[in-house]
Length: 131
Image 1 (cartoon, one colour):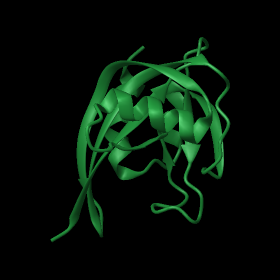
Image 2 (tube, one colour):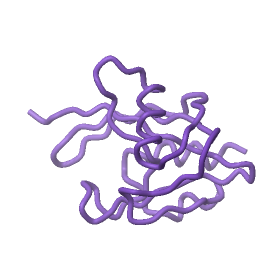
Image 3 (cartoon, helix red, strand yellow):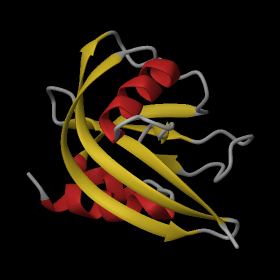
Image 4 (cartoon, helix red, strand yellow):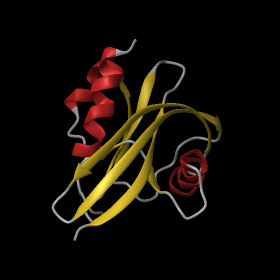
């Protein structure tokens, strides 16, 4: 039986309406796919608490978590991932990548040009049609 993982992703938007996207490094699973940063929900955490902790750990900044955008379950070759994505905005600090290979701010209409991990795609599609 495949392992199931419950993860959260932050769709961090700046004042220019650009979305923060991170490229998974070659030594991460799903290497070289773009994603919304985040990570696993630990026991006893709400998705929002997990997101705040993960963004603080991964990007050294603090966020405010907004509304849920998407809740997707995707079956990869070795694992089943349930990804909940939430809108977020930075309330303190500047995102600095420590685990990812690259990061960039992307206009909503250009998100689909990046090669996102499959579990992120439903959220990317939703963002593209929102204004």
